[in-house]
Amino acid sequence: MITVSGFLSRLPEVEAGKKVSAPIYIQDSVPTALEVAGVEIPEHIQYQSYIPILRGESSGRAQIYSAYLKDAQRALTREGYKLILYPGGGIARLYDLEKDPQEKVDLLERGKGKDVARRLFKALKLEAKIHGDGLEFGEYKALD
Image (cartoon, rainbow, N blue to C red; front, top):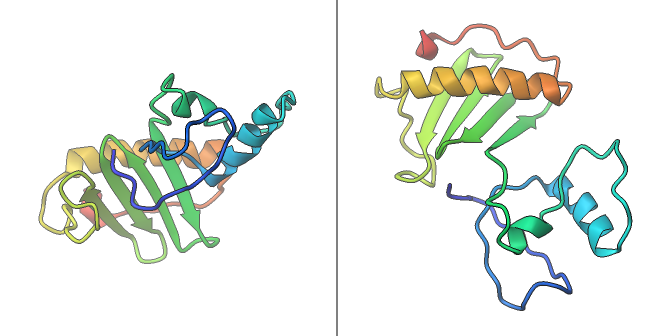
């Protein structure tokens, strides 16, 4: 999976200059800092330490869910694709991040990727529920 944005951290147990490409949430920094400090991660923390990724014990999350503003945009990155929804306008966009990391070619607009988009849409709705996002997603013509 290609990561469009970067994240930099300096941890005592990681060699200087090490580069890792793996999907994480910025909130994963909290359990990571707790782990480095030797503090037990409380049960109410929903995120995961990324120390196992840095040690090479994990390849990171299978998917990343994101929400922008209360009802403006939702997205799910998974399987090398990114599905972006604009609920207010009923617009769905799908990008192949391996071939198009800058998200310039919307596959749905070109009549491609509907099966992938439908699968990601189902996963996105489930992730939204897990994250407590009560947004009503509505219908998306591109997914018909």
